[in-house]
Length: 357
Ligand code: NAD
Figure 1 (cartoon, rainbow, N blue to C red):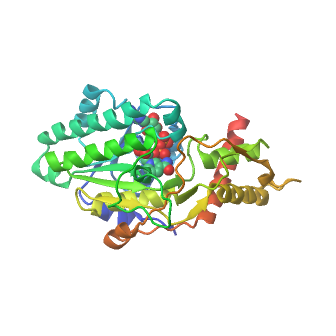
Figure 2 (cartoon, helix red, strand yellow; figure 1 turned 180 degrees about the vertical axis):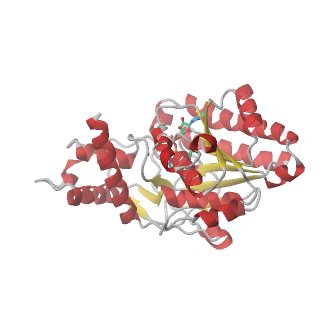
């Protein structure tokens, strides 16, 4: 039996919502959300994505055979949200009952090297979709306007860094410190202002670091696995003491489905697994899982090398998720060690199929 929301629970949550649009659905979290919606609901799913280096549509194609009427249930729209006219036309065409807005440039290192794309996609892209929705909703029937929701998917990084034992919560003051987190903070403010000014029915969530299958291979966890498999040095920034709060991606998907359908309009929900680890502990744990799966005459942790720290590297993130737990009944199901094991096993197969091709 699955740990996550069942088909019955999901159908009940969605109620009359029949058409769901996911932006950024070719990326890591968006594709997990689409796979879940396709396999556990009857809704029609639209996926808008510009297809960047971080996208991989195989993450959705791989389940196509197991979904009846896949071609009628799923539609991909190749679109950059920075183009307002095309975005407006796409929203008008899809007429969704629910939007999950995930499309964003998401790699902090890239935002430090070249912030331009982050300002465009994360701020202008969010403005374009908000405006398109505001305009398109005028043509909805009053019933469909009443059930419509816009869920903005954001990050805990908007709150900055923690230097003591406190935790981020919904009321924590925004203090973004990288071009990535500043652009996400800006998009959060835009979304909230469209709620207050135009009564757009929005819900926001701010989640901690996700991990799981189909994450772009240059992100920390897949990179460590890739380097370990290839017997290459595994780089860790600084002394590896930066602390992150890790959440398995399917737990995040549950939280998104629950908060978008049961959450209060205009509210934000902090999402996190309360599973904190330093980067060094995390990488060491991954290495020992690889030692078990693929024993070698050496320990994979011996491949760890420390490299100069990332500019403005936030020391610690930690989320207090009690609001979504007590108000909406969400809880995370996957323990970090179990999720890491599943993830390592998945990447082992993924990287070996890549090298076989
Ligand atoms: P990702 O980089 O894997 O995927 C993002 C997708 O958005 C890509 O397929 C990309 O092509 C698409 N995209 C980017 N700009 C676009 C544009 N202008 N028009 C259309 N498509 C565009 O990212 P992810 O890790 O899946 O993150 C998804 C969302 O969740 C982001 O908004 C991110 O800020 C947020 N988030 C991520 C994490 C995490 O740990 N990965 C944690 C909290 C919040």
